[in-house]
Each structure stands twice: as C-alpha cells, then as structure tokens.
Image 1 (cartoon, rainbow, N blue to C red):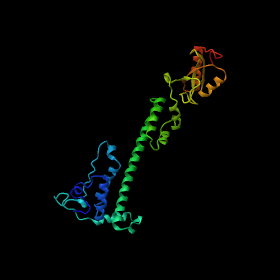
Image 2: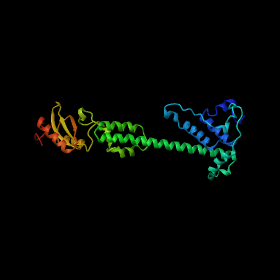
Image 3: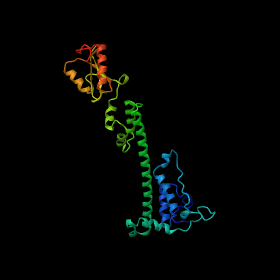
Image 4: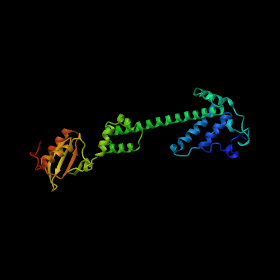
Length: 294
C-alpha cells in the first residue's frame, strides 16, 4: 500500500475533495509523478473544483481524474487498491526544473517538489481565471452594444435606458462604466443623473408641487421642456419654456408669481419647446402671461 493513503477509501477515491486532491498530488510527486499530459488533466480537474465551474455550468461536475495510473494505477486487471505502480521520478524532476529559477534547489527535495507542483497548479488556476475574465468582458460588450444600438434606433426610450443602466449597475461589474461609455451615446455619469429624475407624470412628463421637495423628480438642467404653472384653484396661470427648469421656477417665485403646482413636458430641443409653448399659450391664454403667443 502506498504510504500516506487511508487504506482502501483513499486508494479508491483519491479525489474526494479539493484538499484531498492537493494532498495526493503532493505525495504522488514526492514519489514520482504522472506524465505531462496526465498532470495537465489532473490540474484541470482541480482548477474546475476550486473555481466552482460546476455552478457556472448549472450542474455538478464530476471531478474524476482519468489516466493517472502512474500515481495510484492498477496493474493489469487488478483493482485500484491492490498496489501502486512504480513511481516515475523523471516527471517530478522536470516539474522542479521548470521552477528552478525560484531558488528551489536550496530547499529539501520533497519540499521543492511540492512547491513546484503547487506553483504549477496556481499557473493553471490563473490561466482559467484569465479565460473567464475574457469571456465576461466579451459578454458585457455584446450586451452594451445591443443596449446602445436599441437606444440610438429608438427601440429603447430614456426610461428603458435608465432601467437597463440600473440593472447593470447593480451587478457591480469591473470595467462596466468604461464599457458603457464606449457603447452607449449617453455617458455613464449622465445616465446616473437621468435615472434619478425619471418622469413621474403622464406621457413622459413631470409634475409636482412648489416649492419642490428635495429629491423630488424634476427635469434636469440642460433638458428642454415646456411647463405649465397652476394656481391654488388648479387653473393654468402661466406657460413657459426653458432648459434650466429648477432655476426658472425660482425666478418666477422671486418675481411674485403665485403658483402651487406645475407640470413640465419634455421636448426634443429648444425650437420644439418654442412651438409647443406657442400652441399652449393660444389655447389656454394663462392670465399671468403678458401675451397669448410668442
């Protein structure tokens, strides 16, 4: 029986856990290791176990290692617990030589072999992590390309864009802001502002009381809107347009206009706002406006 194995249980099930895997690899390399191909197969099994590849694939992976007869392999048709194959020292020496630049030659042979094997497994893990990172980055870029394309073609409106942004931001993905700015015409910081001020009224409009409570939705600075002010009797008393809504409300209040509610309608640009304002003035003839039209 191979020294260090727990009788038949370890010999028949040498990969019962990740800890068991590393223990058997260390002991196997001390006595002699499998071939390069077999060692690679063993490393891949351990890497998948450590990284939880089973969860990523939606099912539990079978972490069996095939073809490692050089470690605890059978002889002919004998069962795996009968006796071990003669160790092969050449492979273990090659593993140590690969990492000889790390001054392992100054260590006891068994410790140097164990450390070299561990470093090799770390290299395999790092390679797996790099591949997963590349796959995650590619998936993110494809998603954001779709979001940006749908927004640019009108399939996704501002509310939908903000909803997509909020869902993405909740994932806390590394590099998400840079990827967003490269794929979507509205920048990450701009969408943060917009998502806080989504319209809360009918047909994409804003409405609220005045004075405007802190944090209440309102058009952000730079957005062209046409607005209607309402008096205490809920009658429209003033119609105007601006792209600096909050500042304009304060100007009206300081100028003596009495109003308690407001509603603002988004416009494509200032020219669109002027045209809509003119129509509303002619229709409602608000008593605080000096003229019924621009």
